[in-house]
Image (tube, rainbow, N blue to C red; front, side, top):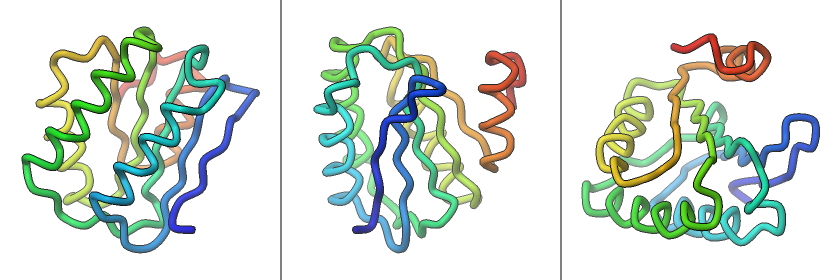
Length: 130
């Protein structure tokens, strides 16, 4: 499988790790699986880690489609904090584009260029912003 989804009880999060080439279809599928997870309505964090992935460039309309899934999911868990680990400039930029399209979401989101930064954010209770 090109991604792994699991519930991390210690931080009350659903985490998704991606591996290899990640296309729009894979990201859409993994989003749907995370949003249907039994713990999704009660989690504090939704973490996506692309440290081991090669995120393919998406078209703006594909990012907008992902945002429409997120908007629907935000009605289930409106207080969610989304944390993205995007280590390459392309991935980081695509995450920022997602944030720009996501103005209708209730979610708070942060993009990090390393997993260490993301983990430090959680350890400090959200005070270590990139």
